[in-house]
Image 1: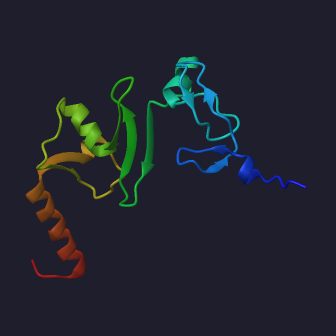
Image 2: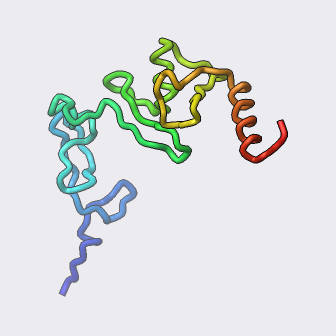
Image 3: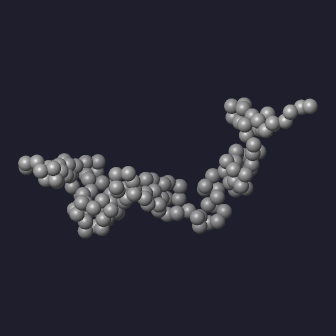
Length: 145
């Protein structure tokens, strides 16, 4: 009696292994053949998905708090380009109307990394920013300065 197991009956992957269970599908938007990740997958990519509903499920911005305590996120520059930015730097760049220079830092005057109000942010040179924070650190540790 021939034994039937899913591994030997599966489809070949790109390395010739028989471990795929889903057949290739054709994207209804661009016509590209793709390997679906799950049974319900209909489109080859997010841009193809977004093109079917006018981009209604495409978020303009997504923000979170990173592991250093700053608000960070992904924003869309144009229809196809998404970048990752820190919110305080992005807000200052929009306010100034230019990109920050590599040697410029954005300082939170009140020390609260999540207070991204423009009145609380100031652009200072990196060396000055480091000096300010070292002075604060010395005061909290009881050092002499």
